[in-house]
Length: 69
Image 1 (cartoon, rainbow, N blue to C red):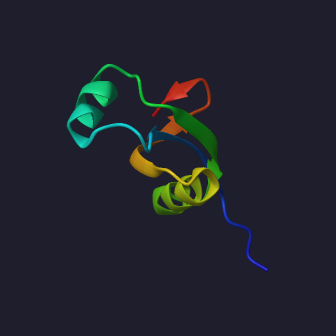
Image 2: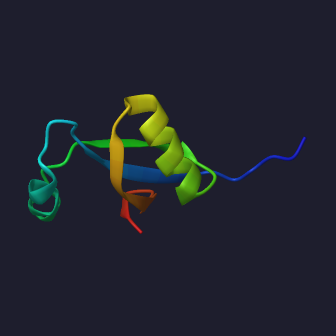
């Protein structure tokens, strides 16, 4: 079994009831809900966030210990 290194990610989620024309505005204002967890890479983080929450993912950020990368 191969051990994979994981990194911390924050995924911004798009609420189901948010109109499409409001997503960019909410994202720019930092008003989208987020979820954080560890994953081996960003694509895995995006897929996991969508599966766990049932919401579309707007963006994925890799985090450093103590802040954003």
